[in-house]
Length: 88
Image 1 (cartoon, rainbow, N blue to C red):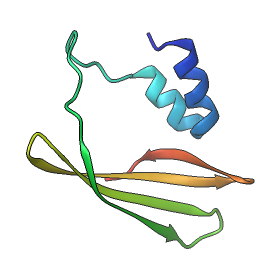
Image 2: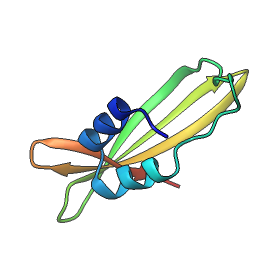
Image 3: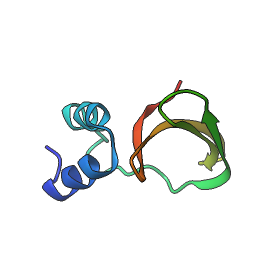
Image 4: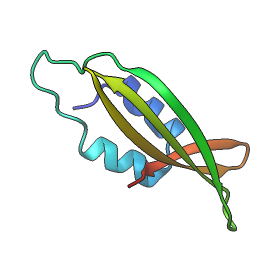
């Protein structure tokens, strides 16, 4: 179960579909295990053309001596950018 404060923050900063998906299947770390701290190596933004403004946030980080990549999609809704999903 996700803490109510976390759920409210997620609903306020993500699209409805992405928030529902994350709340339905929250991450399940091993008991007492937290991921090692990571160091951000790079971060970039690519704006996608189209009717609804979309952006792809691409980044790399180093954790436990390994380099990892990540990518998230964001959608513009009014004056706000909302997390819309994890990009492949």
